[in-house]
Length: 318
Image 1: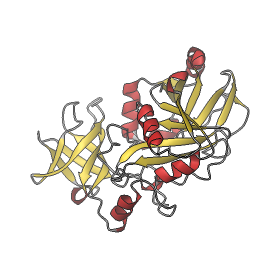
Image 2 (image 1 turned 30 degrees about the horizontal axis):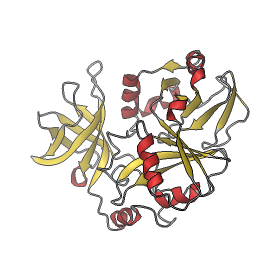
Image 3 (image 1 turned 90 degrees about the vertical axis):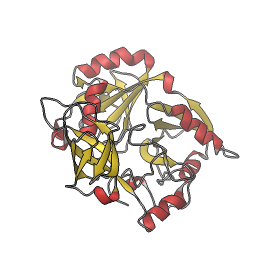
Image 4 (image 1 turned 120 degrees about the vertical axis):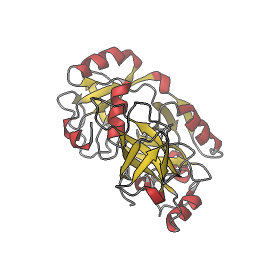
C-alpha cells in the first residue's frame, strides 16, 4: 500500500505493546514543556498533542502523545518504551506536583486506521478537530478513542479495559479488516511512518528523522534544545531519513549498507518484502550529499536503491 491508497483505509490491529502512562498533578504540562520539543502548555481538556523527548545531545528518546483528561493526563509512548519514559520523567521531577503510574498492562489497545468512525461507534461527542478525544459508550463501555497522528493519515487508538478486549475485537471485525504485524509493517513503510527502534532512537536527532514539524523553535528551553537549534541554524544536519525504492532481489534488506561511487552513503533501516516481484519501498538514513531525490545508490551486494524523497512526518517547520 502506498500514499495513493490512503482513502481506502479501513483496517485495525492490536496494539497492546503501546505504552500508557497516567500522570496526575498541577505541574504536568509545565514539566513536559521543559523536557520536550513541542509546546504542550495549552492542550485543552479532552484533546491530545504530540511532542518529542530528547536527551542532552538532542537525540530522540521517543515521540509521545500527551492526552489531557482534565483531571489527569495520559502519555502514549512507543511500544516497549513505557517504563523508560516514566523513569526519564521521574528523573527530572524534583519539586513538581506530579505523580506517575504505568497503566500499560491495565488496558487493551486497538489501532484503527479509518477517517470516518461512524457507524462503528456511538459516541457521547463528535470530534470537530483532529486532536479531540472521543468517549465511547456503546457497544464498548468506558472506552476512549484517541487521535494518533501518522503524518497526514488520521488514525485512532481505541483504549479500553482488558475485560472488553474480545468484545472490542469482535465489534471492530464487523466493520474493519484485521491486520497482523506483517501487514501493518508493510503499510507503515509504504506510508513513510518511522518506527521507534528502527528509524527513531538515541542514535538520531529529530531533524535527521524529518520531525521538524514537532519542534517549536520559539517556546524556550528544553533538554537538547541548544544542540537542535545549532543544527538547524548552521545547517549542520549530516543525514536525512529518506524514502527509497529497492531494486534488488531478496527480502532481507534492513541494515544493508549503502554506497555511492564506493563511498559509504547510508544504511537501510526498514524495508518491505518483495511481493509479486514489484520493487518494494523502504526507509534509510542517507548522508546529505547523496539524499537528493533521484539519486541511485548501491548495496554491498550490487543492489540498486533509488532515493524518492526525504519525508517530513509532521510537516514543515512551524
